[in-house]
Length: 189
View 1 (cartoon, rainbow, N blue to C red):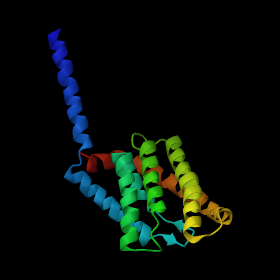
View 2 (view 1 turned 135 degrees about the vertical axis):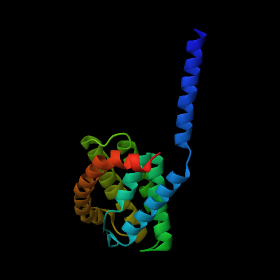
View 3 (view 1 turned 60 degrees about the vertical axis):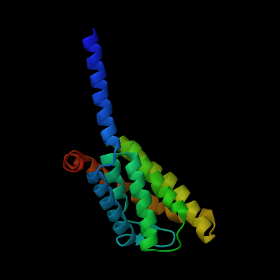
């Protein structure tokens, strides 16, 4: 009986060690996160269509990759750091912390929905929350506050952006989900 108890203790301590190792940031993870932040900045600041009230691009891809590979915290870090550093290094307009908060929340949403599995319902739920709640409702509010524009007309003009990006993001994330097993073997220890 004591032999079973020691096996359970050893088994649980081994499990705890594995969990602890996964929680630690090793060099490889830090490098990958740094590369994803750099990708987010480049895609957001240089390869997106930007106007004062509309933005269309693929800057979500590095955040989704962080979400799929590492989970919500890492995705939130990629989203938040990408927005903050991008705004400092390559400003498009005035820096507003609300957009950084939204980027962090988007990373969390993608991480919670996409880290373990990328099924169609999970993809649609994450994209829907990010596009229609965080992107359309919250970011429209931030734009309204930042520029002093009325919320209602801004909201209406941004609906088309949310619809287009919903389709684009769902298709791209589905592709990322299909490639995730190969990416995980290559990138994650």
